[in-house]
Length: 599
Image 1: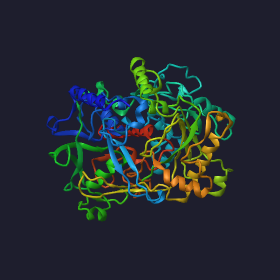
Image 2: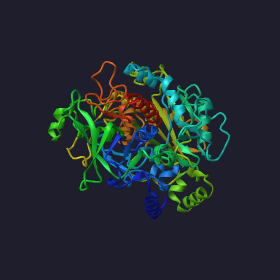
Image 3: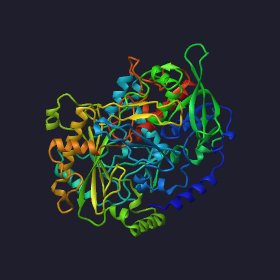
Image 4: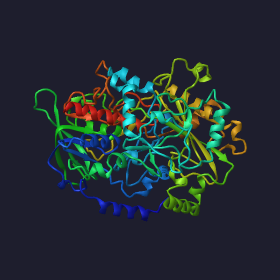
């Protein structure tokens, strides 16, 4: 890992470079804007960019976190697993004790930085299946949320970029389904990975069980294929580097204010009809001066499933009885706010590797890491240019599998093209648990349950915006979630016991090899399941029937006017994959909705 001193130096350089429309001083902004956008993650960055394309509109984007510029720990893809927790650029939330995880509490990380979580995530780019998007269209009664229309936004937002090593990518993706002129770079792995031959040989050995897929972003996601990630050559491509690049952030009608946290949405309750959002208050901290800024047209919340939900509740939109208990006056009574929380339970399974050259070498050997950094700095190539896995497997359990036979009628995925579980491979010891890895050389197969049935919640602890809300992910609280996690665990063992791994895989690591019976496996799962930080649906779009959500099909908050939510919290279902790509498309679609409203 790059030294702390280098990070501090980068911060100093970054702060000295701040000028123009990127501000830290609240007294330098205007008094009112057409649009005030809260949160500079994916949703906020896209919306601020697209709305400021109209020179007649003044746009303010407010971000609680720091500038992303100059931070090598953030920009180098290899360091993504070290970008959280407990960094200066992270929100460090904690869940309540989890009933399904034997009372364990979980750390929960979000990006507190320009680009939001896209600046600290693992950069995995999955659009979701056509079934996922068509399911949203059916839910809302709005066909524009269907795959056929949303696909155009994926093409618009993307530039598929050559990998860092420039290798021939024929047969690793389908160029016909990708964009070539959008703001966001997407790429294939840019360095050789010693696991890749074993992974794809296993796929070929059991192609009927784990089929190959040329491109999981084509609408049909099922199969094992090469991972696509938001990497531009050798560096991370985030919402900040893509949508808040210098040519955009320098627009005279776009101001970006960082290191200021929005504390409340303000409403005019005396207007005829629904209360109207008129602006927001914000401050640098609990003891900082509170400022107010007005929005002539709309306030747009893009704080994510935690941040936007917290702000809605603080501003009086939520269950009025629960709000009253903590001293918040109700603006609109809606018990759906903070409900229906969904996240992907994840397990990192480990095997002993017959190698001395896995990424564990860089974790344990400071000289090897220094050499890799020197090579990266000199050439932009080598082992630091990639995220954790060279490949991704998105699978369903066959209808004739033991799992489905034992659990009839339990499928919760969007449709037959949508996956139920995911495999990722790490060339070394990988874990989301806050404990250091052991000495030695390992390989990791992460399993992710993609369509869990458990539902959690976010509620207020206090009327203070500086007190984190209560977060309950409700992991493994249904029999289905436990059963499918157990089945995926057994499938992971099947994958790693394939003959392709003979000589390389020396057997299961100490942390899991003793767990063999179903009861033992369930104990292992409850003790080791972690979030993969894909929380969604806490402010979901209501169905076409109404009364079962927080926003309408155009992402306007129901019950009030002048307020929208544009982030991962509005999806009515969780993506069977990683949410980054879907939020970009959602925000592009939302931007067109907003433009049409005020045309």
